[in-house]
Length: 64
Image (cartoon, rainbow, N blue to C red; front, side):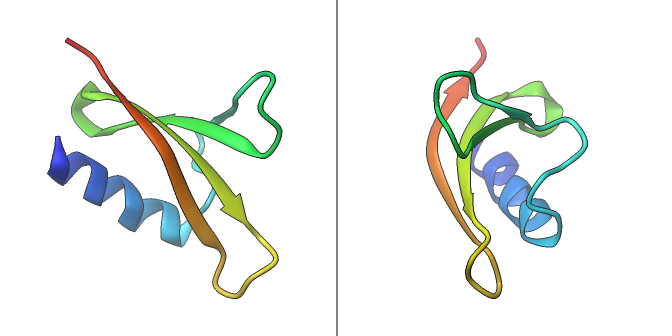
């Protein structure tokens, strides 16, 4: 799980909004994306006003 989260963070640093990311309903500025190997879902926010953009992970939902 940890390696999937690290891989997600590396990818999202290159592109803050990957192809499969979706906005989270009812939470402005939040997005969700799948982790590698379908291990779960990560919710995150991107502060685009900084260079480079800052990514804040709010929660990781694990699939069982």
